[in-house]
Image (tube, rainbow, N blue to C red; front, side):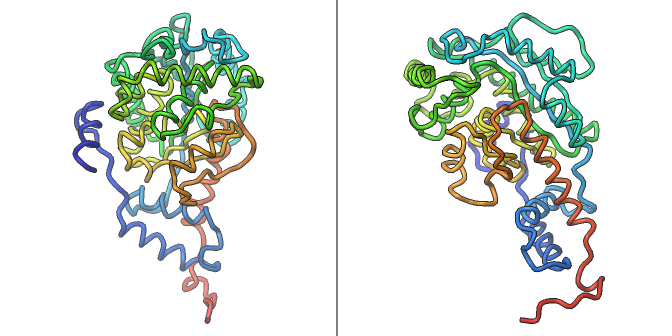
Length: 368
């Protein structure tokens, strides 16, 4: 980690650090995988995942990714007042209540995949919710300011949200969770995510702006203009490329706290499942704070949101080991893609832990 990255992590939380995966652990994992009773590399991405999971564990076996928890982080956006979504801002709060009632897709998919679910209120409009068994309150306010008129939040608020996310992830690691998933809910957050991709990956709004929750062509055109305006209005906070200032200018409370959760999970050497378009924008921001996060992140799926694949291609440079695991034409958010992809992490761990080696099984290896 270079000095600049170290300083950014220290700004969030003194003593925060993310250790790189060690080559010796990656090599040891590869040696074991190559000795399993199969042609080398024949399990493809499952082997890549198993190698990373072994290295994350520091060489400890058996590999474990259970128990796992999905954190669906909710927050409102002032830019929703600009008519960038076909749904009113009130839907954020209504959907959080739906999560409480076990009625959403993420509830069903987490139950099916064996993940616990918690809903984090990062700052929904309308004030705090009544206490609930799956609610975690980490509020930064009643939604952000309108980023098309100025910064979505102050840099101080952004740092507070990042710290909240880090500390929550570390708390969950202390409670025994071995894998974290991150998802979101927030009307107009695809507008915020789009602006972040543009600022951090040097993309143009016309290249990346999409329909989000189902905007028609006219609304997408309008949304593109709002993203462009947000980039122009906030140029003083964006010009030096500081990722924390960029998050403050263009992010949402839920996006900021998701970025913190990812950094916190990595600081405890836990795999973190990154969901779709908006969650990946939080990942891009967190990665700019600390590139070592990539060692611990698993991109769960390629969103059907048109700009997602373009942004990830810019981010990964075509490295297939860091591309999304699934292509299911999903674009819901909530953490749904991560809940589906979690099963693949369990499969990767099972392959590493449970398969016989050629020597132990008495199976002849390839001779030529």
